[in-house]
Image 1: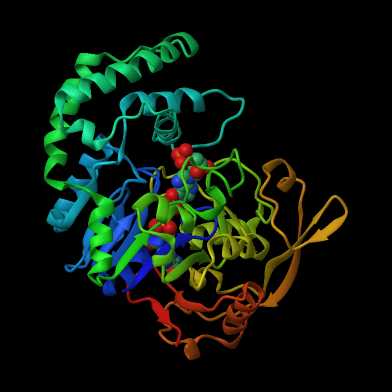
Image 2 (image 1 turned 90 degrees about the horizontal axis):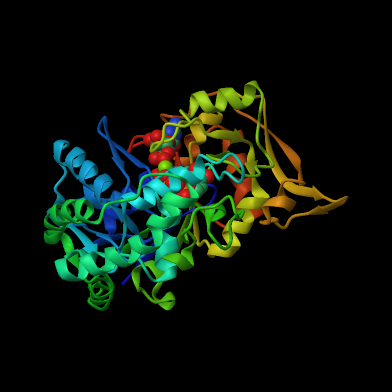
Length: 423
Ligand code: GDP
Ligand code: IMO
Ligand code: MG
């Protein structure tokens, strides 16, 4: 029996999709546990690129049942578009399941997210996918779930109730056009039929599988530093990307978890607003952005780029309890004489190795760097640890020692085969 969690260790886009696809080779179930269509997970197999937003990235393996578990929020329009794209690429979607406790992201959620983001003050730089408002309704207990969608009477009641609260805000606070109940119900009725074949009881499905000794993989979205509680609030998403979120989002008990994999880039990126101590605003940053093709999978926005922040990564290792680390996009760092890694912050005159998650205080931190020798060789063709240039191996060992966590996978390119498994 194994229950593996794959967690983003930074601010998202660490190549979780690629690592999930890799580890899913030995899984029977792959369950997405948090976030919604704000996620964009990329998997490249034999020259074909698959982009996942809601569907778990493990679905490409024929033995895998892919589960959208209850911690996820599902936008029906985005889901329909994604299904069509995957179908066109020949992906077998008969192995997809959706938990009946999944909350639905509705047109009014997207609208509210957009209206809020159009205010200059307090902008978070969200993906405008309605994520915050959906989780807000969930917490306010006025959310609409997949189970509601399956029964028309129940659906009408739930939607009526939420529109009574949300429409006045849309109209009076933002001066926008309210949502019409009848039109929305008609749209939802059509989506109900799209979803029906996939609906399941996700916690039972997964608990039964575990009891039968089936290996499970839990796929995170976003990253630790975007966690609602442990990230750089308020510049975070509204769910729990951390490993504990895998239990909340799937119903799998904490004592069942056998491996917790952190996925980290060999440098750092961030999309949206918020503090970023190691951010580069110079030609080095430009070079990393271009080489790493650092443009968002979901929104196309240019990602902010910076040196590897080990203070932040050590925090992620501790908050999540990483047992394994996958280090990705290492190929992007080829061709630099020296590489900087942040090994401490200076904050209000004092040096610290402890990450400061408070956004206001983090913005005051000065990163203190250790310089390591770089390597010039193109490493995208390396397939074993020993083939890597000595300085690349030193870079990896430095990270392992600082984090006290073994690097078990190294990614040197987007392709499934561009992967080094460390013995
Ligand atoms: P996720 O959200 O964590 O799944 O990551 P994304 O898919 O949003 O972003 C990662 C990007 O890097 C994708 O375009 C991947 O195809 C690409 N990628 C993954 N691993 C590597 C790697 O080792 N090297 C390079 N150069 N690109 C990679
Ligand atoms: P994956 O799963 C990177 C960021 C947004 C914004 C903040 C809040 O591909 O790693 P939201 O729309 O969630 O309310 O936005 O979180 N963000 C991501 N950044 N990768 C993601 O997903 C992200 N999902 C949300 O840019 O700063
Ligand atoms: Mg992404």
